[in-house]
Image (cartoon, rainbow, N blue to C red; front, side, top):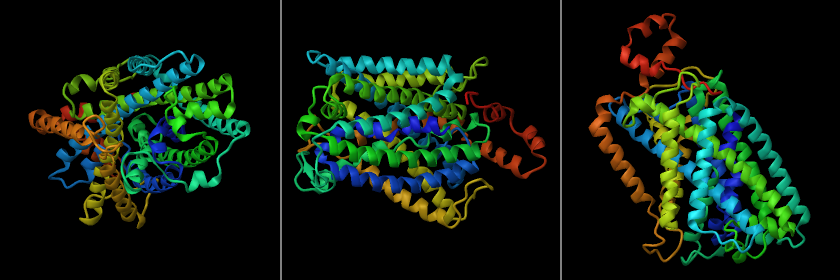
Amino acid sequence: MTGFCFSIVSSWTALGGVLTIGIASGGPPVMVWSWLGVCALTLCVTYSFAEMCSAYPVAGGQYSWVAFYAPPKYARPLSFVTGWFMCIGIVAMGAVNNFVGANFVLGLANMNNPSFVIERWHATLTAYLIAVIAAVVNIWFSKLLDKLGTVALVWNIMSFFVVIITILACNDHKQPASFVFTEFQNDTGFPGTGMAVMIGLLQSFFGMCCWDAPSKMTEEMKDPAKEAPLAMILSVLLGTVTGFVFLICAFFCVGDLAATANTPTGVPLLQILLDSVGNVHGATTLGAMIAVIVLFSANSLMAEGSRALWAFSRDNGLPCSSLFSKVDKRTKVPVYSTLLCLIVQVALNSIYFGSYTGFSTVISIATFGFYLSYAMALVARLWSYVAGGKQNTPSAYVLGKWGPWLNAIGLVFLIFAGIDFNFPQEGPATADNMNYCSAAFGIVGLISLLTWLLDGRKNFKGPTDFIEGMESEQTSPSSEQDDEKSSPERETVSTEKGPGLV
């Protein structure tokens, strides 16, 4: 499961895919130092999630925990809204990953054939192809997901060392340490350093995301109370180390920043590889290794997204939930939720046909959706600490007295990040370069509100009785009798086993 999770997080390749943002917004020192800060604060959130996941390993993840920890009066609507933000964040992140993968593939094509001019429709159609491949693997080759996670972990770590060692050994024009650690760059169009730093943080926020993926796969694990929390923590630690080493090595080996940012390949990392190695064939080999990692990520994000949609539908959180909560009896795969995930990813990738600014908003939506759902889970957990609400059952991971402090620090960090996601990346702000993240999430919030009023408040019961059923199994010798007394309708939803993939 650590391999599955790290194939999604894959911080060093994620950072490499969005280097353009950091190069213009503070340059190397902002990216290097902000990465350490963001990772340290992310660990506060991760440890808090590990404790909740260990106590209640439910496929719904954060929306399930909100339902349990929040005040009973508000638990259902808060859980419902959290589920919507969580699902849109996961699916949007899959679309972003498809776009990053498309950029790598097309960038490699341009590198080998400089006369090939990359158009927006090239990237969009290639992103479609990546999404379809991921859906095919998840539907027809689902039994390979666990093995693919192991292969992805080995390939990722191997590629990391090959790329780092190669560029360091071949590059003969390395930058001085002052360039990497102290020389500030500001090409954002905003005066001063403050705004540039705020924008530069976005790369680190994006690079350290999706580490909660194991919580969506808990109902497919043999020992989820131990496996899922461990996978989350290890993926963040691995991501921290690999991301930090990658940033330092990449910036020691980078050439002219302006030329790198405006490379005809469209991917600054590919230009760094080419400048370092000095020949197209070597750079292509290294770039192809990274592209394979992005394809692994696409597959894992499709799995995570489909499981999140399946779990939310199981609790009647989506329109047509009875359809999207179905699991194929033969393959044990949530086929319809996988197809829904595919359709939404393709729709989000289609935005790039009309506007790069519009798709940049999708990137903000992806990260913001995760962070907002994280924050709502921590708010609910803090309320349970302060108000003496429901507490955890005995579990493998217990934070003890550190729990409230880690929750509070993590929440402050997430609120700050949430504000930062809404700033435009270039100045002065115009209609063409404006960040429409807040408007997009306003629309998502409106849709979730309308869905709640029209359907959710009647049919969405949340996963609380499912969690309480888990508790009774742990604490009551007569849990089987209690299950027999539960409502038949909810029993068919709550006690349905998760897709048997892992």
